Image 1: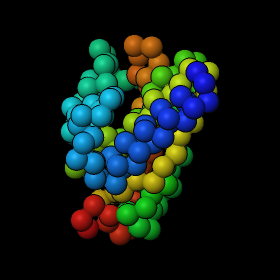
Image 2: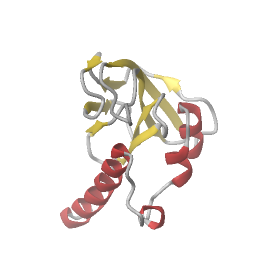
Image 3: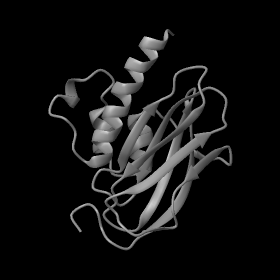
Image 4: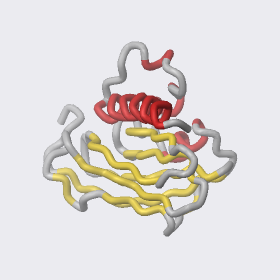
Length: 155
């Protein structure tokens, strides 16, 4: 992949992830290449995994590392990251269990790159946060509880 192609695909994926994380998808997002409406409307980790193509339940993995604070003082800006040490990771999703739309961000990982992502998420209340990695036709997750002291999704 040429540098320009990588940057173009990265910036559009990042824009969609940021829009989803903020809860505000652009009006044209549903028509954007790669937009998965069903996944972004899902209400649970299992539903997100299914919408992304899982045929079985995701498995917990120590090779997927989730970085999130134990306590988020402001739910409007919660820094969350994930790094997959699983070979051939194709996607990483960030899922907030108690948000109105559980899927907060979805990143496509180009072949040959480090599977490491981070972004700011909004959280309306304390919740489990999941990193979900797609490797081939299998899905793996890591989870961490994040306590929110000031809500960010209308709270």
